[in-house]
Length: 198
Length: 117
Image 1 (cartoon, one colour):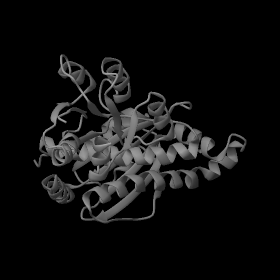
Image 2: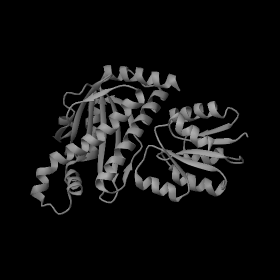
Image 3: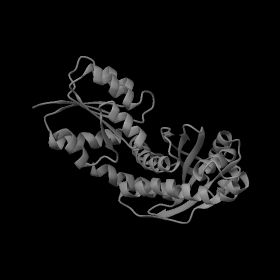
Image 4: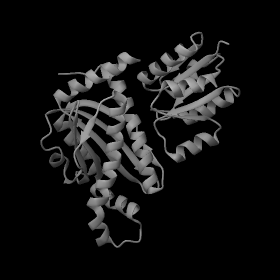
């Protein structure tokens, strides 16, 4: 099985970290509170393991945004929340005064916007660091269990994962990037170029 | 003047990048590296440190806690938090501690400006 060297792993973690820092800054401005970021996790693993991990973290009821990206490498970027927390985030974004039925109406729209900002910040930062261009499709609102969300993903996945918390509201979310085998090889080549330039 | 720089970052790539830039501008400087806050406290023992670049988001002790601790130990040292976490609230806490703030990504301009100041 393809493996990442220690330095490739380190470089990818750092690039992801920089992207998430930018994303958290944008989100923080939207919700007017500090976002706490975890250290990013990167793992070359099986689809089944990712399904299991996300199910455990979210009680397997997830709302989120999925965005396909393409360029030097292709994959899916996901912004995920436990379903019961996503509505709280929408409440924070849209204001506390809106009635619940109005909030429900806005859930898809509000999460799409948050997803767009966060995922683009992450991917854009990664693209800038690697001096490549990444194109994104429109964000899709997704709901369901982790198995449904990862439908169509390849069996072996590069799983990049960071969790973030809106500190005052105790809302935890996850940003996940999924890359298949071909894209992992492409990404490794881009990282090798970056490391050679140091 | 020969100075000693401490680089603390859990990313080896980041340490490599900072080191490469500093070596270019200040080739005679001594450089000490650590991959965590805890390791940093060990490697600085008995040494004079003039300049420090500290990452914020690391496993274990965070860079700001480390910076405040090292400030007491090295009151005349120039300390900078080098971080991807560019939220205003973080920047304010770093400012309040009297520590410089350098947003990642690491670039030659940012590092060169900090070390030459």
